[in-house]
Every structure is written in structure tokens, then in C-alpha cells.
Image 1 (cartoon, rainbow, N blue to C red):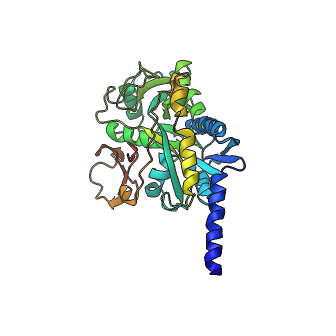
Image 2: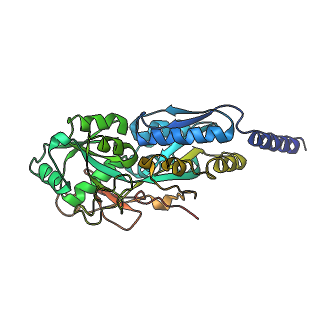
Image 3: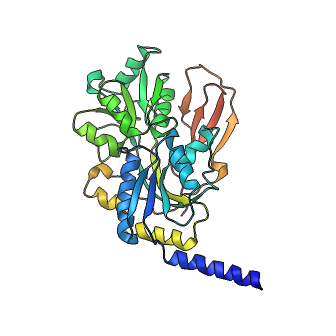
Length: 345
């Protein structure tokens, strides 16, 4: 009887804590450096949640290891809703199959609260490069075998995945130089230190419109309303090229249902990204009010015979919502559910 009463008291205490949520400031973790798209989205969502929850929501940048450090921090946090994360496909869809020493489980260690926005990337170069279009960039790279490197926001992030897809379809093999997010990478391109990179449209558009960068193509299936004069990669000559990235709100595993419900209700009614888009076309991305569906079956690996030229590595076109990444050394083919976010109705 004593154990039963203690259990009931514990449940009552948890319920009381959930109903009082939040009772102190909430930490919104961004696993990338300031200045990139994930950081900007995190700050927009944090401001909206602070208004709705009645408590400050502070953005905490914890960059490193292409999002792994910040994600690991959230996974280990107390699951009371006071530590949240703006996660991206890299940390929760790509990482499980791309990295062999991941210190968190993207399914078991997290509570998926909701997907908030999706956006395509744009291929940018420095105007100093003198390249006018995608075929011109491909020619530039092929004319300099082994000499061309490009920037990415990290190893295995969206900009890297977009570039690998590009490499495969264009039959090129440049080297990548990773950075700790888009913010540190973009200056390397617009300054002419590295010739090109893929960057998310919401971040790259301002550099394109100011003339600091030249846009060659967007990765979406349709042209971006933000950059309507920039062709899609497919229009630029790469048949079958279409991808975009997504972001979602996550918390540690084991969060109380009432806290999760409160968080959903705090951001879903007004969809802050879309409302903000009306004032800033650079954020003309779509708002998704459905929860991401994550399952282990959606991320799997299989050994590949690795037939064909050694230059044909990277991503190749495969069924919608999947991409195929072929490893350079282990000759593995990894299916990544990142081209289209999987959501449940």
C-alpha cells in the first residue's frame, strides 16, 4: 500500500509539473554556429514560443561535429520541456547512417514535437569566378581535375548532401572543405577563397540580391519565390535533381504528454515561419503542422559492389524521399530519408 501511495503521489507530482510548464526560462539549442539558417529559424521559433509560453526562450548555440554535439546535449537533458532543439535532417536522418560513432539515438533519445519548415538550397559562386551557369561550373571543375574544392556547412549536412548529389549527376569529383555551419562557410565563397557551395535559400538569398554571390540554380522541384529568376538544377541541365531540407522541434525522450501538447499548441496556431514570410519573402518556405514520422526501417545500409567508374560516387537519383550515398572507402550504399521529410497525417 505504501508503494502504491508513493506511485500515485509521484504521478500527481508529474502532472502538476506538466500543468505548470514552463516554470522557468526554456533553452532552445541550435547545434550550429550563429548566422546560418538553422540559427535564424531557432530564433524565430524561440521568439514565438516565448510570447506564447510566457517565459523567456533563449537560443543556445552548441556547434560542432555537424550538429552532433548540440544533439547529444539535448538527448542527455532532463525531459521536462525546458531544453529543446531546432533539429535538422542532418542530425536526425542523415547522422544515423553517415556516422559510425554517433553518441545518441535519434529515435530512442528524443521526443519529436513537430516539423516546422522546409526549404531548398541554392548553388552560389563568387562573381569573381566568372562562371555564368551550372554547365559553366561543371566545365570549370572538369578542366581542373583534382584542383577544385568547395565549401560546405559541415560533413554530412544539407549543403554537403546537395553537393554530393550534384557531383554524381555531373560526373565530377571535387573535394569538400567542411565548416561549422553555413555562417562561417559563406564568406569563404563570396570572398573568392572557395569557388562555390550549396546554401539554404533563406540564408543565401540576401547575398545573391546584394550582388555578393551569384546564384546558378535552386535545388527544389520548382523555382523559389524568393529567387524567381534562378532556374532549378533540373532546368539547368541536371535531370532528376530535386531536394530540400527540413527542420523540426525536438526534446529529450520521455517528455510528459501534457508538455508536448502545450508546445504544439504554442506554435501551431499561427505558424510563425509562414506569418514571418509575409513580411520577408526570403522565408517563403512551407509550414508543416504534422509530426515527423521516424522509424529505424527508414534509415538502412546495404553493401554495394561499387560498380562503375571510381568518380561516380556520392548521391544518385533514387525513389522519392530517399537518396543514395556511396561511401568512398567502405563501398557501402546508404539510403537516407532526407530528400523529402516523411510526415504522418
